[in-house]
Length: 363
Ligand code: V47
Ligand code: SF4
Image (cartoon, rainbow, N blue to C red; front, side, top):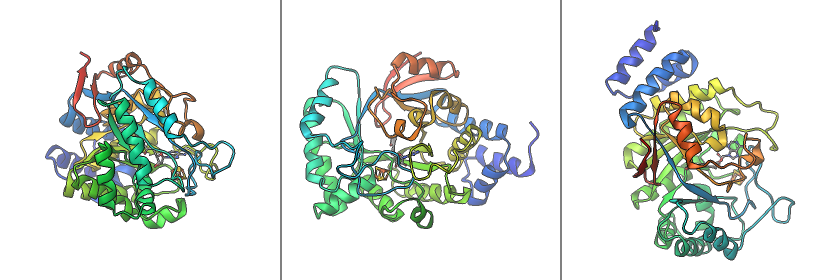
């Protein structure tokens, strides 16, 4: 492989474990060859997690798609009373949880719309009821945006609100709601609170011992510099707290939303983005390809671009992406489908829990 001089310099930095600058990130996005990105991202991935690729056995619960916000990329949210909306009662949530009693799931991921009438006490009760039915299962719940609203509604601080949920049984936060952590771009995409709110809630969670993930919604109207600003903000919070487990690029899907005229990016762009993320975010241990968002085949391909985690088996429990035009109308994977997908990419499947402790190795 013939390297450009800038690639040679970046390769040397990566081999010596040095951090890449913003300008080097720009070079990787704009000019580095596809091969170079793959080889380098694999090198970093293997340094962190060897030949292992992680997955978990999980379900989602989406309590409601009623939402006070109006994100232009969202195909999922409805206003109260609008056709296609839902809100589960606590009894319905208990029924969903009971369905998974005595099954091998290790995680319930709870997220949904920002309901105008529900506060932190309501959601703490929801967590307590799920925990009673599934006492050994991790509860990873609520994006920073949902948390911000439910805390404000109950007039509690971020710290108080997180404590209330933690005492009820919350163990981790998902990474959603981050979109692109840049206020200028945010204003063009949505009407949610600015990026500082997302950062502040994750910082406080980490300080309280609640680990979290970080997502990045890419492939719409943002430019490469916005992706790098976003990753720099995550990288510096991670330097401070060490509380992020995984970074999850989410490809913008353009069906049934107000941004449907914006074309989706190519699979090549998706793979380049995984690789640059792996190289730039040197302090976040895991890079996740959320197959429900990107499709099973592309998730498999991403294993050659630095990805070491494929999220979970899902069991057809999320609607966010089927409503936005993703490949699977009913997203689910069996464990054998998941392990086969990983094995045939030459990697070793490892079942993990929410905090990345190994549950089972598939040799
Ligand atoms: O924040 C909404 C995204 C996110 C679209 O932490 C869209 O393990 C693409 O955060 N096209 C919520 N993306 C989902 C999320 C998540 C998913 C899986 C695992 C984890 C984790 C977190 O979904 C939102 C938004 O960025 N989203 N609409 C769309 N049309
Ligand atoms: Fe509401 Fe989330 Fe959709 Fe935004 S992405 S409108 S916050 S459900």
